[in-house]
Length: 150
Ligand SMILES: Nc1ncnc2c1ncn2[C@@H]1O[C@H](COP(=O)(O)OP(=O)(O)OP(=O)(O)O)[C@@H](O)[C@H]1O
Ligand SMILES: [Mg+2]
Image 1: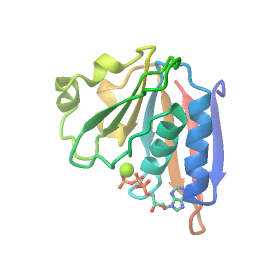
Image 2: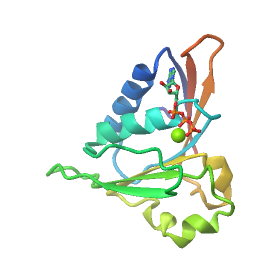
Image 3: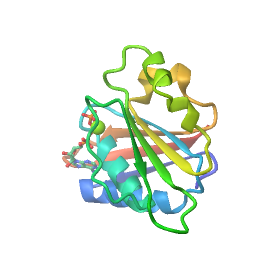
């Protein structure tokens, strides 16, 4: 993991997915990813890569109507047992997420959390987190991803 921040460009959804998978392999548990980027930037693509890399077997749906989904990781011997996926796009107030217990997952050594549209729930984000931003590139299918450790 980078100390401060790193930026990388991908040229296809496949590459962004692979990047998520590679990133997952470097995680220890307890990480929270605050993911931002406009509609269609590739947040969910990246989250699917992360999930696959962590060993989530379930299909990661785009939880536009479900605020939060908790996936169990069944592989024996894995320290990370849970992947929590949040889509804050429709959240009106951060309390909607605290009410359903999101913050209880923050920093748990057996859990990794990924929050799409994290800027919408900024007050509830933990101080220790990774801010991950995706930006559309000038050419089709190019995305610029920035990872910043807080
Ligand atoms: N380099 C790339 N990385 C990721 N996705 C890409 C890339 N190039 C093209 N795409 C396409 O962009 C779209 C990204 O969709 P995705 O659902 O991941 O976006 P999102 O940021 O989650 O949007 P939303 O805000 O609606 O949740 C997909 O259709 C994907 O195939
Ligand atoms: Mg999405």
